[in-house]
Length: 61
Image 1 (tube, helix red, strand yellow):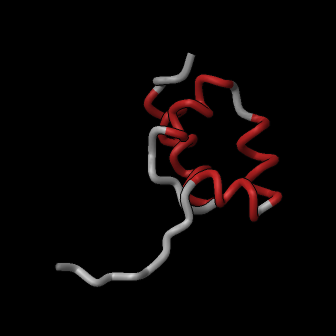
Image 2 (cartoon, rainbow, N blue to C red):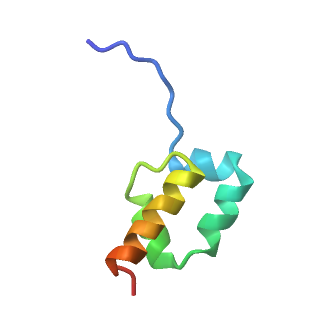
């Protein structure tokens, strides 16, 4: 049994505890918010990088 007790922030925790992340997330279109919610995003930087990747791939409408 793995006894790894490291706590990782989930998206809801990140948005609740980091105002910059909250503001950035809520400035995004609903489609992008939904895509972010499907991932294990744990920081503002990670969220921004994921959004940049989506834009670069042209997968956003």
